Image (tube, rainbow, N blue to C red; front, side, top):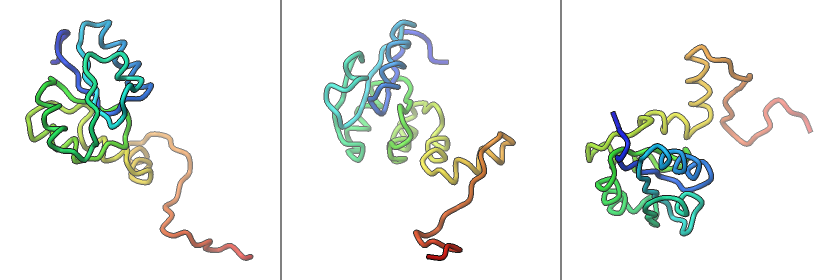
Length: 135
């Protein structure tokens, strides 16, 4: 259980992260954010803003060592970031498999459909060709 006074590490720094940070701080948590952007929406309200590339795994490692739990503000954070957090023993919420699933729309739709959730009709597209279409 992650109780108030703990530090939440957020990878990503947009508007969703800002809303998360504001609510977390109101509940008594500290918030650190990590992204390549300076003076980001999340960084403007976070207790600490780290500006580094997501592929700078040394910076990622240093960041996760200063937080109690890690989360993601959006799905385009490289999966290597979650692996660094997991390797250091920091809880990753949601789990890294969720990040992996959300990073590819077909995988995401197949997961949802497989869980019995309603999804709009979809089909995999494997090329840019216009199969079945006549000019």
